[in-house]
Image 1 (tube, helix red, strand yellow):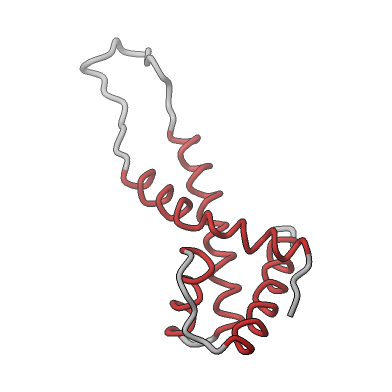
Image 2 (cartoon, rainbow, N blue to C red; image 1 turned 90 degrees about the horizontal axis):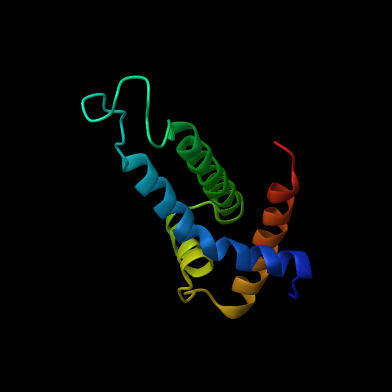
Length: 120
């Protein structure tokens, strides 16, 4: 089944999934507290960057959650969800028959369009 331009664009867009996961993992692991022993009190050379980090983490996590919701809605079982995450997000090879793969890919792409188009 042929995909629309919007569906193809979203299938390509979710290839950034590994980056999003890496962003969340790396930024959540950062431990940059304000230290008062090294700086003069009431001054900081770079200010409080916690808000910026939270915004970046939230944006990446929101995109991850949307992809996961679409995978769960279309593929249902954990094994198939993992296989299809590997195919669509990490560029792996599908173990399904062609006809079944293309049919479910069309459903998945339609779900992506719906979920990524909705307003929070």
